[in-house]
Image (cartoon, rainbow, N blue to C red; front, side, top):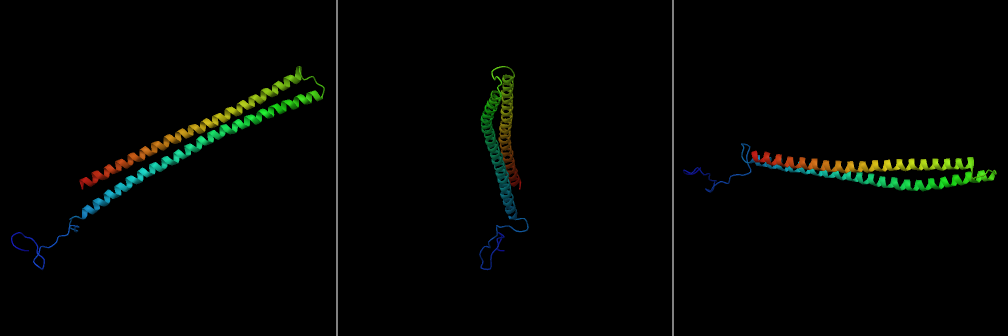
Length: 176
């Protein structure tokens, strides 16, 4: 120590360098801990945000698949309706040929009633099949809408969690 100022001198008579890195007595070591806490808070917030983004992407993908399945359901039903129409015509033609082959008059009475009833049953079956396919397709579309909404909600939730975590980190760092 030299003179009245209390400044430290090294062995050469010059001022001694003081460490700003801190010491165990409570110097600057706390600033490293605070920085670590801030970095950890930022990383945690980033993790929350990216988790929300990834979950949203997964729900959007599932929604796209459900919409694709709905379109495929309708396309398959259109094909099925065509096949059923052909089968109906074929069956009616066979009935007509059988009656005609047996010598039964096909333009009056029971043969006509039977063929009309058969056609009516085919039409009913086709309507039921079409209805069921449409119900299935709309269910898939509804699931797609729910998945899209859920994905957006999760993303918002995780983004809010990330922002709140950042604010908490910043407030915590400013109080230290």
